[in-house]
Amino acid sequence: MGTVDQTEYEADADLIKLFDRAFEPLEAAIAASRIPGGVLGIVDLKRGRLIRAVGSAQIVPIRRPMQTDTWFDLASLTKVIFTTPRILALAEAGIIDLDAPLVSVLPDLRQYDPNAWERRVTFRQCLGHQTPFPAVEPIYTYGQDPDLLRAFILQREWRAGPPVYSDINFILLGFALERLEQKTFRELDPGAGFAFSAAPEMSAATEDCTWRHRVLCGEVHDDNCSALRGSGHAGLFGTAASVLDFAEGLLNCTGASKQSIALMRTPLSSTRTHGWERPYENWSGGDLCSLETIGHTGFTGTGLWVDFAKGRAWTLLTNRIHPTRHFDSGILPLRQAVGNRINES
Image (cartoon, rainbow, N blue to C red; front, side, top):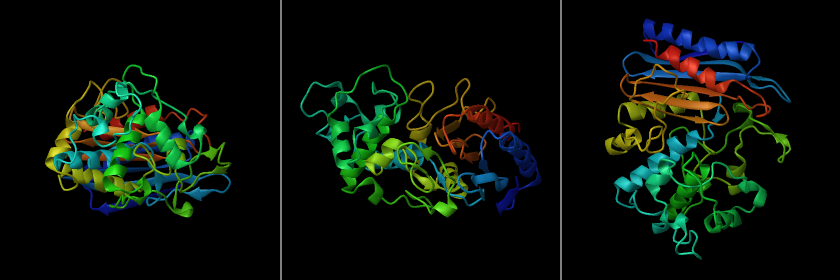
């Protein structure tokens, strides 16, 4: 199976011991063939930083080992690492009002029905998933022309329901970024060690896609993001080091303004803040993190949790849908077990 250790700067003995315990559930999941491989990283502002890899980055049609610098399709971590900080920065600069409707930037949203409920949806509601948009929608099945798909999303009469976690919220926030920057999403610069694609030989493979007819590696897995050629809800690639760099920037207030970070920590519901999740019963971060923790996960098997009370963050990046999503990888209990061991002390 094999592991590759990388200590990016010196960690104290207690952090190393804690990290070793937290790594055990990941090793066990790979030994049980639940997932091919993974990378665990932790940063503690007082005690150091560690990253370790185990298992395989790819198993079909070839086998490659997982490395600490393997690039991952971060999936919905795009929402919190890329889209949320940019929306909050625009609000702080006075360019948008979080409580204004999206039509203040996207005036053509449901433009043929001035009374449509979609025209009243605000930026803040989208950040907190407090809108009536449906949880999932196979947008990619309506075509592969990204401009026409954008028009379809903006003009569709969406079925309304109770507030749920919905990619549509962040797809629309991505459209707003595109309008304000006058660039397509893929023309926006992720920066800080992130990208919108990666070299296949350096990337963790995701799914053997049933409609693209290949194992995806270094290209976005999310079907809708692929069809849109980039969007606000998925598509960002990064390494464990770049994810930890982002988290450390939140912890020490160098990666975003204090006002934006405060909003990321401000509850909008019992489970969500502006962009992020907050602790609730059976959440992905486990039972032992402080109430000052925010976190988020990605469908491909990724996750990031930031505990402001402890000055600590951890990321668990896996390729749990390789070669297929139609398998019980046990990703939720794995995430919880890792989080609980990290927060035992």
